[in-house]
Image (cartoon, rainbow, N blue to C red; front, side):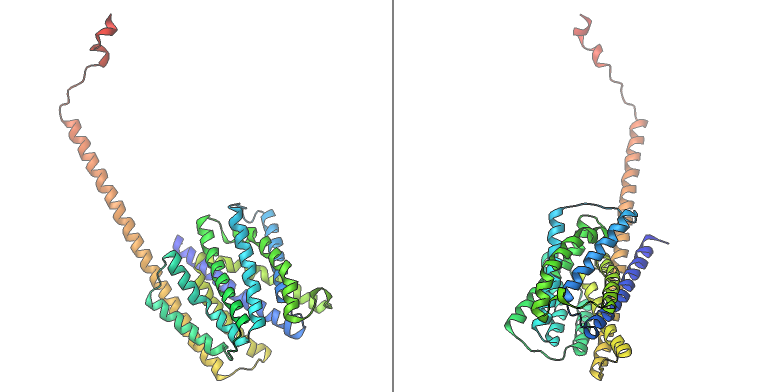
Length: 353
């Protein structure tokens, strides 16, 4: 099996792991929040990150991956930014209607495309742009119901979109710049993310729910779901960094909308959530956009690979031609009569004195 095939299989595995773990944790958290009344989402996320760090520390102790320290300021800034973006997304949900919050999530893809185009000179073909537009249209039809605007909620949504885009772009660029794996980056940034959310979590949750997370009655069933949610989160966090590192922030957002469609479908099948023809139509349109996006991404990556191999073969041919010319030049010199130079010390009369 070639290196490109192994990379493709690894990418498919990362995408599958991300989808399965994310849908699982959404269903688990929905039961925890809606059924059991544990509405402290930001604090719960800080516990997720703490458990993820402990799990990775055990994996490091078992030598399942190698610790690779790099620029501590970059790690700290990245971790704090990631934690802040999660808090802002939760605040956006709290101060906006559900429909406007879904619009906020839809805005992440165009914002990411804009930032990567402006600052990284990344080019997105018209086919890719069209696929993303179809995808966003479908998800919008399926999820956006009402659009109640308010100034504070709009500002929070704008900050949430910008910080989320920058954090996801940094996830990709840091792994490539410092040549670290997704596991190494997650292990080093997890403490900063967890501390950020652990500090702001109880305050944000209290502001949004008017309840105290430490005064909540923790029954055995609530604790069991919290533990299950934390265990699933290890896979969610790991697969998130893995997918962004192997693909791109835009592809990760496309995958996120696939998860949204799957959550809607599973919610109808398992939890008997209300479902309409509008949801079905939106999901179908979104799936068409996702399939086309996957097709054109694969097609363009194959074209780039073929162009790179062609350039490599041309470079090798050029090196071979230069070697042949050097060898021919060397044979001409050896065939010709070259007068032998007399030793320098023979012509130096001072040495005979």
